[in-house]
Length: 287
Image (cartoon, rainbow, N blue to C red; front, side, top):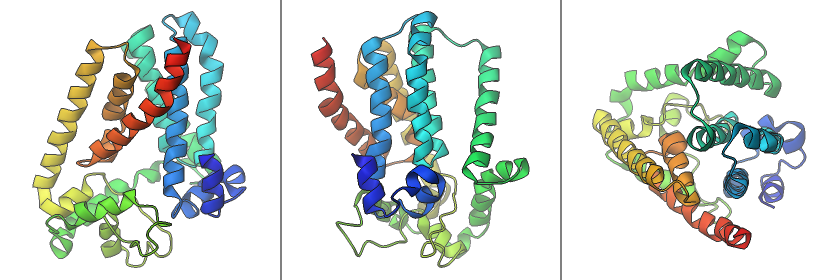
């Protein structure tokens, strides 16, 4: 349902099927809430399957692996490599905690496989045309360096970037006057004026907008907050492995929380409430 609403409200239509990367770049804005609920739905489905079937041996895990692969392959149509990687890590997180820990030599092979898959996906999606361009995808390091080197010309903002980042929660359909430039986009507007109007959104390190507000102190506060939150949820999960909600919070806090520093707890709260509504009903029915 959310995929359909995204395709219609965002104007991408069948482009999400034929060229999801282009649709992701140009037809997501203004319909981002549908996109968010759609990609969360993929994670919901993975969680539901893993926790209702509950494989605890390699054989049991292999039996459901085709189904897991189909769900993971569906992430291709999100146009986002991050969505695939996060959900793949979710499955690995389950395997390590419930089936068997992965030995170091296999973990290295797995990491190499993930990197190869990531680079191959760029070629498939047309993000680049050669291997050199695929590695150049990580240019957000260079863009972050460029921002830091010019910091005296743009910062500090003393909270303006952080406070304006909350615009991200409000659908543009509810607020037609919602600004194009807010949060971390303030950085790119300084470095690349007019880029947001043209639909170009270069990536920066996720702590950049906190650096913009409070220099290195913003980065330190973010690191402390994210570290404590990740540690607390993971420790709670380790002591209560039968709780699907603590499992999902541990996954969210240890795998993808770094993407939403400081006010990431709002995403966690929304994630938790939605699971209580959607997953809890199904689990009670299964019991």
